[in-house]
Length: 226
Image (cartoon, rainbow, N blue to C red):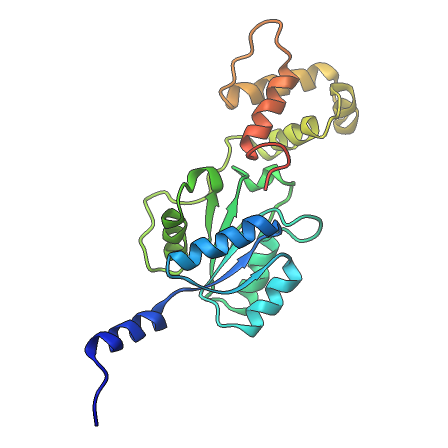
């Protein structure tokens, strides 16, 4: 009986070892582009979906090594919620949260922590598909993580982050003061501290709220964020 060529056996083994990826992204163009890019990096995209519900169904229908999930999936569960749901069903699944948000608290308060071992990747820091593949390899244990690798949290307390979101939502200092049962002067002082912690210099005459809005949009990757 003629045996297959050695090279054919190696190719088969390599295909068997290719990382199987579930892609969860609610923007159609971004999702299709990422899927094509991951396939070019020799990943197997077993499913490409846009919602939390579809992600759960896809994970139950396919063998998945790693889920690449957008943090902001529109109204309803966040990417972190999806990650926890997938981990509950499969404790060994790798998780990559890929987002424009420098800190998940920028999306909303009281965010759950990421599942253990999950990788938080900011889109502005992932400049190539090869770098995204590296994040996936980290999540599934195929690549070492740099020392200190983890969430790139913005250096603000939860209270300061809440104030920043209030400003971004359009609330005036007076409205913020009423909601927090403090004086407007206290709000102004707190906002000035936020600017200093973000390294933003406010010249006399500049509107601190404008500077805070500029900082906020920079931290979420532009208006709307993804």
